[in-house]
Image 1 (cartoon, rainbow, N blue to C red):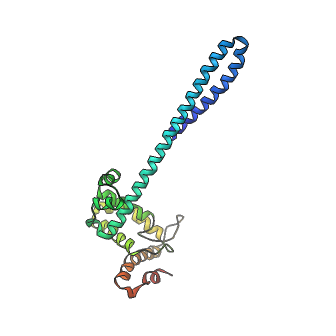
Image 2 (cartoon, one colour):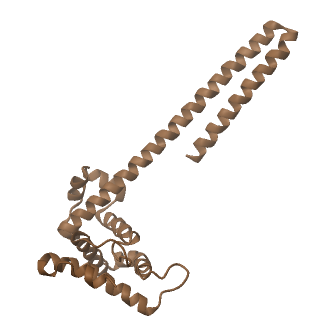
Length: 227
């Protein structure tokens, strides 16, 4: 996109310069030969129009490219959102690529063209959930829903069952836990802060499910995680 904008800007600048030169030459040529002056001026005006059209065409292609990128990002987000719902409902093993595609309103081809495989889709989803603090929520974050708790369990279980996935997500997970301490980027959290973050993660993963299983415990997650 940057290259397209540079070319378009150069074309517009050249068109402006051509228009100015047309005016100047028209004035100068008029003193020598009206016919020659008119011919040169006409040729330059046509060149200027051509450059304007080229600039508009380039700008149009750049805008179309932006729209395609935006739509691609929307598709990716919709597939990840659908994967979150389906995996929370059916588990990673029970969720198929077709299930995710159908829930998002796409074909399986859309999943494979964006993520390559079911494992790649799950990894992208786990990375997003960790980065957005939904697996290891920070103090003061919105309460974790039962659906989110189920998805978080699937992410933690997958990291433990698959050594390759665990290794791929290890840094993301460690970063999420560190950020959940609220220590900030200017210092390393203490061991006590890390321990509290792990305890908070465990509570927000299990307690919402307990509340669903036993309605008499409603509100337990909030009570246990609120200072």
